[in-house]
Image 1: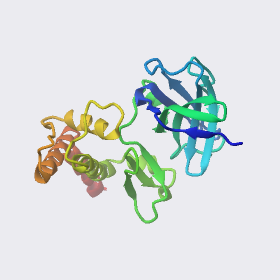
Image 2: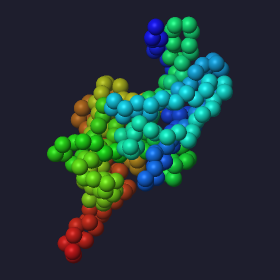
Image 3: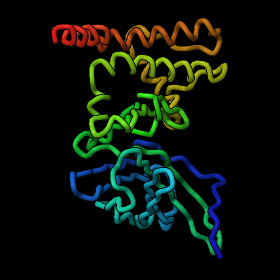
Image 4: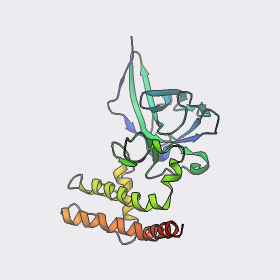
Length: 256
């Protein structure tokens, strides 16, 4: 008989306590390792821990011991994937009780950081990955945590394209505006910036960190919210000198 997993009452693991590090060397199978911290969750020591990598219909699972005795955290080959683009990770803590499996805790849709860039545990606020976008050059995916998609038809240089000054100055302010409009207009109550679990709260903390951006209030009407978004985008563009970046790109193109 197939065991069914009961998701009722599961706890959400914080992103800072669940990290995945990915390494891809040309000509070699990509690998990953994980860093987990369950100290603050009061989970049963004998609960089983599983690491999962997935992309569309491809899926791979690794057993990582128990909460009280973690092991087998890496390195693991991502044998089901030829590359790490668009691969996401999750952690599941499961208590097996006879024929029933109770999901005790979970963290999902985690992007793997490159070892050379994310050893300190930092996670990019807006991950960039390639995808089949048909005739579109880029797209903002907000089906879960926001991701910036770049058309895979560009080829192996898509990462360089995403870092190009023209791309950054034209695309990123628009993406930021779309994300902030979403969190400002979801409901009458803006996201709580102190909530560590939701992506909306992470973006709210980012917006409030920008120079001159005020706290968004539930009493603000639609016009006030749109003005708040515009003020945040403008503050970010000034901070990173976006217009100057684009001017520099135009100058090089004209000189060439």
